[in-house]
Length: 254
Image (tube, rainbow, N blue to C red; front, side):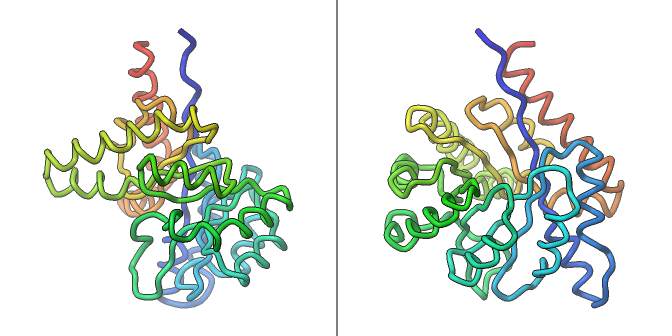
């Protein structure tokens, strides 16, 4: 049996910008954080340009594209304004996510069933520009099949419900949510979809989900930036990389 592929780590640097914007000015610089994260072992950088610009700003996206040597994943809502910016920026990838003005962070996955006709033209336009498109979805077979119908080659499974249950000590719910993720991830190969996952992951949950070898990328931000306050960004990313690698090795019995 071949060894599972290395699990990629995408580091989301949104909340470096959150700290910057709380005071105004230019510091701390999220682009500097991206460069540091890559040096510490990140395989790519994720940034979400929201409609309200509460953290990442337009010039951050332009500077990230011009500066980093690893893939840039542009998280965006499916709007004409964000499509125009993505087409100008030309990131390696764009992840379409739900967005509401009142939310503190992305809450739940895209409504890929009800939003099929709205989302399909955005996936088509981005794909025509050579941008690899992913859809941030709930871990369900119905959502996976809808994502394939829309034409996205990649899905990112929303891990927030599982991570919240783990954090609050709701063991029964946590196991139910992890099983949903496991079943969904296992179906992605059959459906011809590349499988990513993210939202709420920490060292322990990243280590466990790394054992699901159908998942090839994790995108992690808030926890890493919070941990960086105490131990520094470089050690935080390195520790996350080690946790993921340990989880992957355990899946292969190495």
